Amino acid sequence: MRKLGFAIASVAAVMPSAAMAQANPQGSGPIVSALSWLQGTLLGNVATSVAVIAVAMVGFMMLTGRLNWRVGATVIIGCFILFGSAAIVSGIQSTAAVSG
Figure 1 (cartoon, helix red, strand yellow):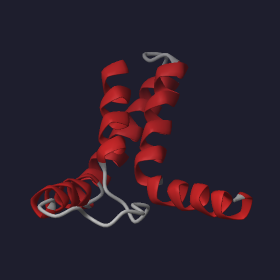
Figure 2: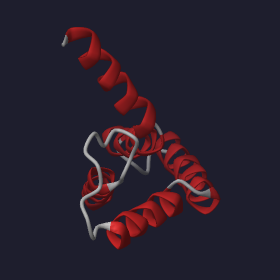
Figure 3: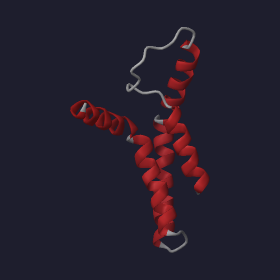
Figure 4: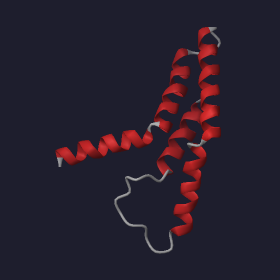
C-alpha cells in the first residue's frame, strides 16, 4: 500500500494544471501535450470508476477487519487528493494572493 501512496504522490507532482505561472518554453509542446493526456487519463471516467471500486473494496475490507484502518484511510485520502488537486491548488493560490 505504500507503493500506491508513492505512485499517487509522484503522479500528482508531475500533473500540469492552471497553476503554472510561467509561459511554456519553446519546444515544450510535446511534453505539455503528453502531460495533458496523462492528466485526462488519470481524471477521466475510467480512473473515476476504478477509484470508486477501490474505495468500496478498501471500506469493505476495513469493516470486516481484513485491512488496517490506517492503510485504508491512506488510500481514501490519496483519492481525495488526486481528484481534488485542482481545488487544493486554487485554495493555496488564493491564500498566497491574499497574504502577498
